[in-house]
Image (tube, rainbow over all chains, first blue to last red; front, side):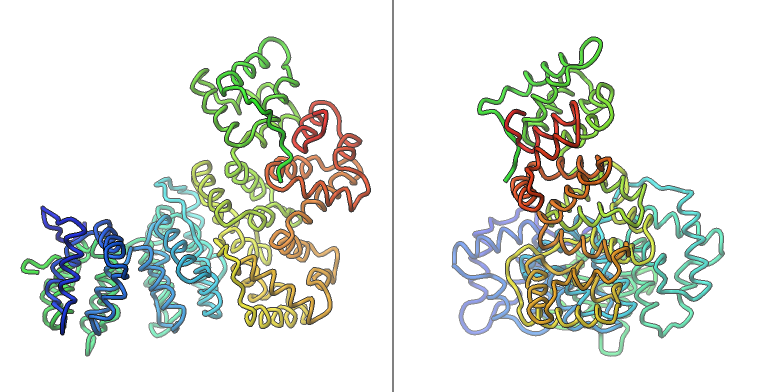
Length: 316
Length: 316
């Protein structure tokens, strides 16, 4: 359900590298050429391009892009060109370094990826930062946020579909009790969200709704300004309905006065090859305007062109 | 530093399987034959034997062993024959199911294995139990024990040698403050032990000793009967001096009135191929008697023979 458009005949990596080298040459950069290549290659192809570029020119393509491009366009091209696991490691590291209570990126990465993808991100984190992801998360966050985020980023969930219905029932009850007592940081709430498989959590939350009437996230909205509660809700959404979470992220990023380019870039770069087709569809339904039109209205220039390429816009 | 003795000419797996099949035949079992094969094959060879056995006879070698052997001898042969990751998953699962506050097996597995070995154990846990290790640990343990054990079994530590000395200094100070306040379950103590690399923790604890005079484990012995403190000390030992931890486990298992076969079996089966040579050496120095002599004195029959084979006793 990727929105990426890869041409039927993909040039050899060496040819792409020559074109990129050409795009960087002389004064100024040929941004359109960069977009026409990198904006239309999948993860494996981009990886081959990076390797071929390093072999052929002895230079890191990412460093070249950093030198040649600027601002939001630079950021989306860099993020996009990174391998997904490296990209997650990079985003998570950035989130720990400038962590604030309203930063949901760590929960997003920990919960919307598969167990294996999160593991690959943790391995990429070791390689790049000479530390573990969980040690930076635990070190840079505090209080309830740490209590929730450290186990989330450390999880390696079971990925099977098996569901224990008796357990779903008892844990739905447990969640309801704790939430009714406003014990939102309770050990058991965190334990369930951080360790159970996604299928099991889904069953538990279905039972919660059937038995107690409300969607759990509604009950977790007692104080809409509470940033801890917001992260708990984001966690739950990323675990069971990631597309809905990302649709909302895009909606908030675009509808903001002044656009939140950080979020827009991150969601497009991380989801284009995963589930952007579904996110686009949800976006259209929820906002009565297609995502590409909304992007066109809110962004300009090469940044706009790259975003449109990644969300599969017709002319991009 | 394995004590395992593999013959210079190892028979083909098919030949070993034929011999094992022969050992199981008729009334009674030829235990000596079982020991002479399985007690002298490394992990890769045992794996090949299991596979070949299943292919040749359509039967699971482990199930056959379970049927043919009994008691302590059965347990050590079964544990030993398992792949190390499966064995860790099995031991950890057992520890969660019959968890008591004095059970240190979870901390032992989480901290004495490499990051990669722990990950393999978590993968084996998924495959075997259709659940994650951390979800069972978090579900079956409580209070401070859960607070410590859940992050320990979820860790994927950085394994490099790099040490941040400034950090070691500040975290040694932090540990000392919390311990002086008797805040043994403090978030920061757990964070440091559960997330920092082993090299970093070692540096921190060296600094602790230099600066504050005592080995940290001495300061963590305020109440020798406190089972939580005992697990914290075991955690630290497994992280920085696993051989010392295992020497002590053997010492306590053997010197107990009546021998603790559970611990003796576990330590021999899990360390024979890892660091038993060092453990044996430490044992001899600390107890003034060689480990194999101590084992001979405390155990009998086939169980004794299998233990001696695994610790590399001359005649075994």
